[in-house]
Amino acid sequence: MSKNKVTIIGAGMVGSTSAFGLIAADITEEIALIDLNKKMLESQVMDLQHSVPFWGYTEVKAGDYNDIKDSNLVIITCGASQKVGETRLDLLKKNASIIKEIMPKIFNKNPEVVVLIVTNPVDILVNIACKMFPRKKNQIFGSGTILDTARLRLILGEKMSVDPKSVHAYIVGEHGDSELALWSTAMIGNTPINRFAKISAKGKRQVFNQAKNAAYAIIEGKQATYYAIAAGVVQLSKAVLFDKKTVFTASHPLNGEFGLKGVSLSLPVVIGKKGILRKINLDISTEEKKLLHQSAEKLKSAENGLN
Image 1 (spheres, helix red, strand yellow):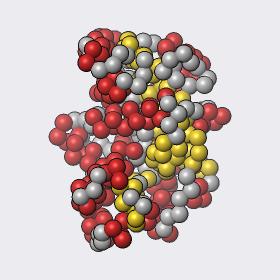
Image 2 (cartoon, helix red, strand yellow):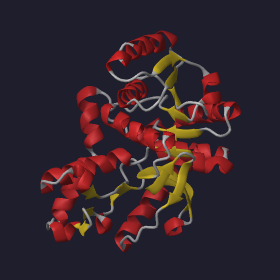
Image 3 (spheres, one colour):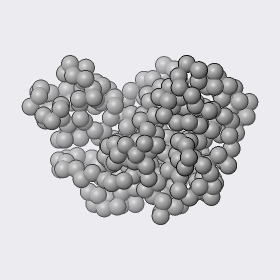
Image 4 (cartoon, rainbow, N blue to C red):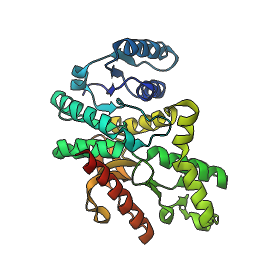
């Protein structure tokens, strides 16, 4: 590749805000947006182009699937969005059909491209995509629980008067109602969280529920979430475009980890130029393993119901 290029499929709120974040970060030379709504697409692109002089220089254009040929990264944000009262799994049938349609088009244009899926329910859509292209499973990953993890770190940082970047705690499993916080591995700096400051079991539940349910509160107030997930998309893109080898709780297919197979969910992995470079072996509690299995079973059941 002669330049860093990103193609975004879906120019709605998440796709366009992600594009804006990439422009502001000045980390890609070209962004192509694809959307079925051509009028909206042209308007989004024009608005984004007008932001370029305030940042670095990024070429932004209304594209098509041919743009994937020379792209380093494809970001999928298209599909039905979560509405008030809906869970992420409620979106499954509509968005699964979209993934099945577009994945062959992507790899037909560029077999080497890395694919980041943001559309919900992200874990099942990642699993469907990886089943379609098992040899490319390391090139396919989802945004997963990166936002849930960021919310958890923000809340803990505020509670403990610590920069959230110094909080090392993960939310894993489904990006949804069955996700779980890994309190057994949570640290402030390199100090176990319970040694840094005592948090009661009730306090931990309150912190976790605040992080887990944040999306519902935001959707109720303004119909959609997009700023924070777009910020996460920018960081994932940076890891791919510059081979940063950064650890994220990205959604990916499991192959025996914690006795789980045939399901995709979020656990910490290293992300770089080729996608998922390696997985991280975690030592988690017996209760956390049980909750992770429950999360996996819920995802398997939903996907089996689709089939």
